[in-house]
Image (cartoon, rainbow, N blue to C red; front, side):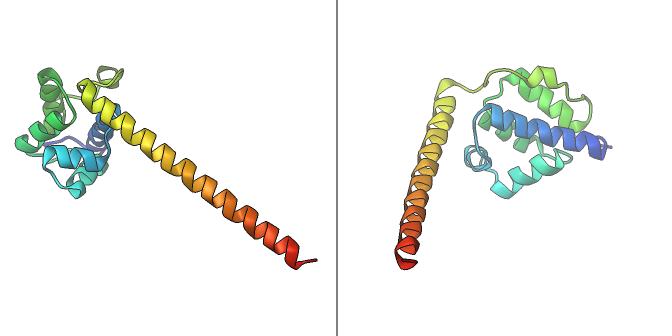
Length: 137
């Protein structure tokens, strides 16, 4: 069966997710860089790569910054002719530094926005508590 068993496909979906996270990219980033839809990227991460086209695999490999050996390995896994060996895919981010910097900048910006929202929420809560304290007098 192309793509292997259901468990094999889930493992390849988990691999795709690991590669995306290793590259510090969101599903939206991968979709934009690959030209695939976000829906397709999500489906591939959820269901694996059972019928992924070679073109899609190439685009994903490029978007994730995989070298040619990693791309070939991912294609073999998608065809069901190789198993996922997690140790092969561990370690530091494979994409060039610019992609890693982009991911870090996005993460830093998101953290700043979250901190700002928490500060605003805390101030609103303090004002509400102060207002209630005055009303109860």
